[in-house]
Length: 192
Length: 396
Image (cartoon, rainbow over all chains, first blue to last red; front, top):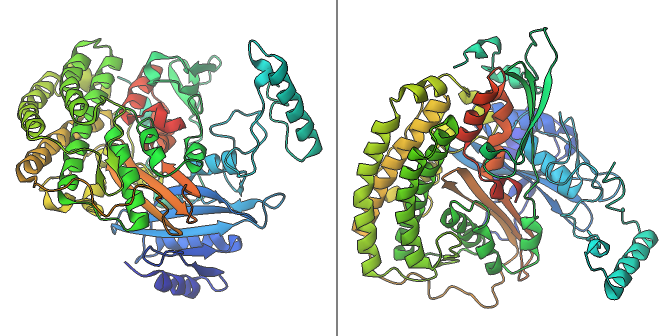
């Protein structure tokens, strides 16, 4: 298995201008990963899959991470043919609010199909080029992204069979808080 | 049964997979209109609450979209708000048929994150429990598959009779039949007594007879052969590209078993073979599970013979105030359903910054539509059953 540094120089030799950096693991005993610029991610992915030495034909795990200033998609690649891995690649969005799109790698590895849908559902990363980007686990009318760290749970207390004073007060407070902030109203449109 | 699958060509070459060109749908016959059926979430064959939106042209499936989330409780979010150890009992509830392998995968990921060693005896116990889990999972999944074929009761009860013996062993060792909460970072919670090991040897000695009986009963059964051979074919290049793992991948003829590839734990000490299928149809998946049960028995016999004495918990393992150094790790094992992985990011705090489960059941369903197109709706039940999923893990 090649080291991360070798893979980085292989990518740079094959795809000129590919923005690949080494993202070092804070714990030096554990493997480092490669940060890919979203612009050329599809070319890099195809190269990693098809290169005769690497042959990373199996995408095992796709997941999102919510960092304070951006969202991140992490991909764990293995090779079934060469039986090596993992090579970890990651991409960052520009911010957490309005520029949250990343290129989908589902056209290269189909195992990203459901997993990118899940990341879209729970983190709100929009994967451009995904063939069927819908929510996977939450229902279609749902508005927020529950795995984000600033997610506020809805107060469903008014639906309690015996909603009483305190419960109704909390629900009211929540409604006011929602209106005063940018929190999206989760129930709105759910029944549509 | 139906051989109309020749109408579609799923044998997409790698180039054809480029740019996402799966067979979106197959040609309609042209007479009559399509019937939209929601199979599930309360259909008895969906192994829980799972829905398939199926379009039918007569009896033939021309489109199939799985719908998830009926059992979603955001396990990952909950795990990120509690300590590392507190998630251990919750992993039992992912794939509740195989709680011990879930424990193992999570313990392995955390041990990787903190560089924790595991004592020899604990490794042996993990292998013994992991292979017992694999055995009862495969027996049960075959039993359910035959049940869905219409053989109501008998084969499933044969499988559950053996499963019961294994669950009794789990109960005696861990205190619970299914919600075991047994493994810890750096070992196992309690030691196995010599009496338990002796009992396990007795149970394992009875397993080959059960597999022989099961195979004689089923493998050449005319109905089973007619219903499963040539049904739900999955080509190896599609399987690899779609991230299919476990018995389903090996039934398509791809030699990839994480016990061999990663040799996690102490699997490099045991002699076992990796059975591979030729056709990748439902019959092959059934047969691979049967053969894997035999290999599991082989591993169990070796492990029970060689198990050494000693502690089951690393005495230096930290339990109170457990705070891994900042870093990230991905640990994976060959769970009975496929590659079960846990991805963890630590920021140095007492609970994980990011906790992710890589669910084999969910990802193996990626190719469900490909396998079902062109088949009768009765075969969908079989193809779905041969994937072997548990909804607790699919929806998390």
